[in-house]
Amino acid sequence: MEKQGAYLLFIRLAKTVQLPFGRFRKGNPLLLPAGCYLYLGSALGKGNNRYPLARRLMRHASRTAGRTPHAIRKALQQMLLENGMAAETPQAASEKKPHWHIDYLLDRPESCIFHILIIRSPEKLEPVLARHLEAAPETSVPAARLGAQDTKNSTHLLYCTDYGPLLVRLLGELPDMGVTTSSSEHYS
Image (cartoon, rainbow, N blue to C red; front, side):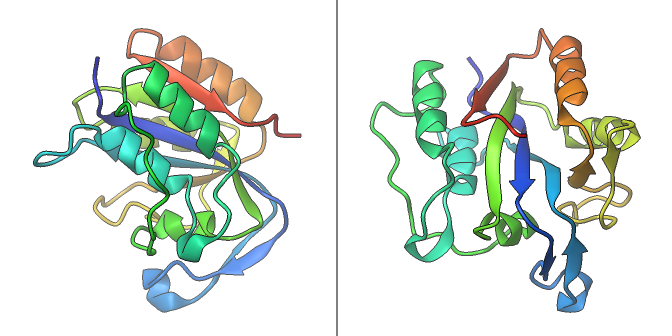
């Protein structure tokens, strides 16, 4: 069973925020309206990291400076263990420091990861998935290349007007790719 792959975080932003994403756009804040956002990422692993996907997802479900982690964290850890995607011993919440663009959004108390779609694969799927998600009628791009500085023509953070139909389509289109999902609550 693959312990690496791509993932899609479904994030609820409870209220509109002005948020700088590190040095993205020279640190100028970006206005993000309240609603649902999708973040596309991957963890293919390097060196001796035996559980790259689990480590990355658990990191995303944590916050900096000992702040309360995302509600999904405990269910995510259990799902990763049950599916053989993580070590038997629980991963402790580490002292997280902002590194990726998404860290700045996920650290906000107004943000909440409410669902995660995991695609287990050793291949780099982000470019294809980004194009697919950007073309979906339910999504729009808040800022070109946000979360995707290593690519020229895509973004990894999208605003989503209606995640339900999009999630159903994705689950129907990706059944043979080792897709696993984890939820902490329903988005309303």
